[in-house]
Image 1: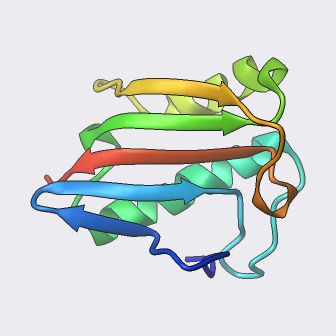
Image 2: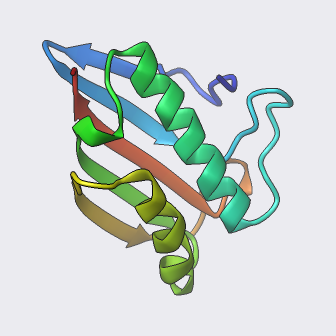
Length: 116
């Protein structure tokens, strides 16, 4: 996992609930942000996958996601990538445009899941 960019945990549990902190497209090998929104989105989803696996969960057990975008015009672009990770169980979701994100990221995704 990439190093956290502040005083927080990648995830925390409460019973069977898993709260995954907002993830930006940091490459875990270099701890640098990926170049464009497509690469950042894929990296986020791969990082979330690892976090969920470490918490005995997976994408099919995500109940809620929140997506923060610095450019809402990128909505369709990220949707095409996002839908690759969800097949049968689509979580509830909110998408919000924000003025900026940590490390000048274009996108951040947080989620809530349950253990398998």
